Length: 70
Image (cartoon, rainbow, N blue to C red; front, side):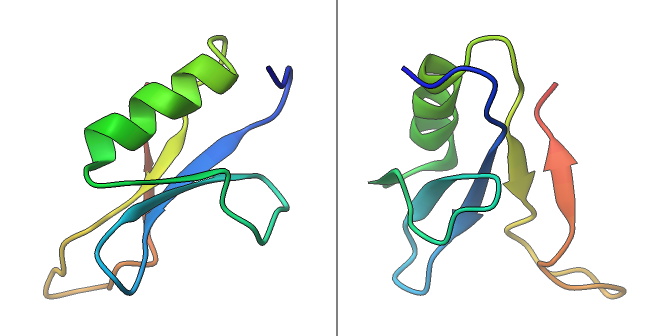
């Protein structure tokens, strides 16, 4: 298990959810739902809350905004 890393969850082009460590280009895992991805990220670092990409579009702004699950 990784310690001290911060993780991000983002939606891929094929509608799966990738868990990536901060600064990493490769995904540590792909999941069908954001909840599964969040559970995996919490196992990797139970002392941190992953940031999740907003997976819906709003009138102002796109999906490039992040929210903490904490």
